[in-house]
Image (cartoon, rainbow, N blue to C red; front, top):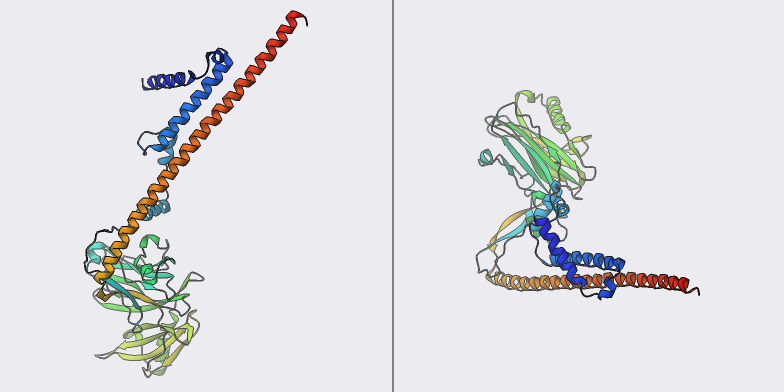
Length: 411
C-alpha cells in the first residue's frame, strides 16, 4: 500500500514537471521518454537535497541502516567516548573555593614511595594507585592493584599512559586518563591465587636521568605475616624490556655469609631501592636491613647495574649516597584558586561559548549554501543534457524527413 502511494506521488511530481515542456516536444515518444527520465532523476535529486537539509531521523534506506549498524572496534568506541566527553562548565559560575594542584618530586626523600592497600580495595576489587610522571613530562606510570576475594590475596600490574604534548605540564597530568593507557602492562606480578592471604604489589621508585628507564620494587608478603621480600625491577622504555634483578639479593646473602657467617635463611631481612645513582645512570642504589631485634641492623648501601651483571657494596657506614631525583607526582596545593581568577575564567568561558556558537551557526549556513548551489548546478546540468538529447533527436528526425521527401519527389 505504501509503495503504491509513493509511486502515485512520484508520478504526479514527474507529470507536473513535464508540463513545462511544449506539447510538440512531448509528442515524439523518444523525446517524451527523455524528458520523463530526466524529471524522474530531478525529483530524486530534489528529495535527496531536501532530506540533507533536515535533521537525521529514524527513517532511512537499508544501505544507510546497514552502514550505521555495523560493528565498531574497541578503539573506535573509546575514541567516540573521548570525543563526546566534556567537562561540564557553568558559564555563569560564582566563586566556589577550587582546589589548586602543583607538581612535586615523587622520590623525595629518596626511597620513600610506598604503595598502601586501603580497606576499600576489598569492596572495589581494583584500585589505581599514585602514578609517577617522567622528568620530561611525556609519560605517566601507575600501578593497578587487584583483589581476589576467594583467596583474600592481591596482584598488581604496572601501566603506561603517554601524556598529551599539547598541554601544560600540570594539565598533562590532570587530564591523563586510563582509557589512553597502553594495552599491555609494563610489569606484572604473579596472578597465582592458590595460596591464601598473599599480597604482591609493584611500586615505581623513580626514572633514570634520561627518562629511558624506570626502577620498580615488587613486594611479596602475607597478610598476617608481613613482608617476605622485596624484588628489584628495571624497565627499559627503548627496548620495552622488563628485567628482574635477583642478583643483588644473592650478592648481599653471599657477602654476609662469607664475612659474618650469617645465615639469612633463618633471619628476616629485606632491601629498600633508593633510585638511580646520580653519578651513573646505569646503576641502581639500594639499602639492606636485617630484622634481628628491636633495632634493624644496617647491611650496607649497595648498587647493581641495570643488566644485573655487576653488584657491589658501596658503603657500610650508612652515610648518604648521591641518588638522582627525576620523577614528579601531582599534589594538592594548600592554596585555592583566587576569586578574581575564577571570575575572569567565567567571563572568558562565556565569550568563548558565544564565539563557538556563532562559528557553528556560520559553518552550518555555509554548508547549506554549498549544498543549495550544488543542487541548482546539478539541476541545470541535467536540464542541459536533456536539451542536448532533444536537439539531437530533432536533428535526426529532420534529416530522416528530408531524405524521405527527396525519395518521393525523385530529386
